[in-house]
Image 1 (tube, helix red, strand yellow):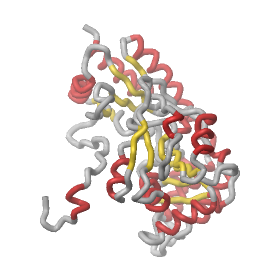
Image 2 (image 1 turned 180 degrees about the vertical axis):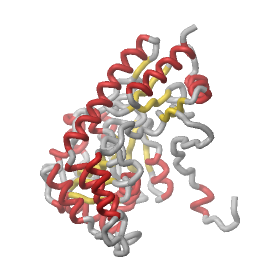
Image 3 (image 1 turned 90 degrees about the vertical axis):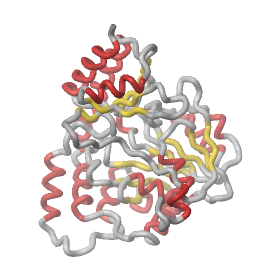
Length: 353
């Protein structure tokens, strides 16, 4: 621990990203990346942008990108904010909408960046305990709070929550911001975008990293009431006015426009997921219902950490969380059919005695 660190740095427990080892070639099923590349149209748009005048700063308002996103979701440009990855947008949201003296609420099993941001920004929080099936008990959000955040589908479980349940949460909590993290929504869950016009307290966070195959570009966007978007902009313009570069914006715009490619790759992932779920259950695994591009699994006999280590030895990376309630589960990203067949073969070798 350095003598030069601030007290914040000394006391923070940072988020731990999924492994990106370079010691050998792995089948990477641990970071929820899309197994399919971006469309050729996206690559060409980025090449064209690279040949433009990149000596100049990009548009700080990301106007063209926001316009394309707004048109896609049938919203006004004032309802759209674009930023450098959904994690950055989440950080801005914690600063923009949550106050230190009022505890916010999020599930006890969820995206592990939420408590990190809460601690970093000195925001109190209370967790809502998921039930034994990892579903979110809606009624536990019906209490005094300073804001609410949860993913739909949830991570790392993959379970979704119905629109009707979300409406109940929004109705009860009209005086605070409810943030719904829709990073994985394109793989089978229902988006809450249609609720924006009726719920000024709703903010939706989305990303290009998953269903649009652009994790390497780091682009996210938020959808919500104009006042909420202005709040995000005030924070952004107090930290870094130029958050997205010209090449990344060009790629993101074309990814939105190339709708058929996006639907095709998303459907492939969904089909592979459903096939793998059946196979895993045949091998005796408990598989949590998933509407994401990953599955959350446990074996009745062999500890998850043992399966994790044995898969890694065999060149396959999955995600293991050494945390209460989920330390006997593995999160497995859905790869290509070929990758998942290799995963199934190795899992069978490990678990079938």
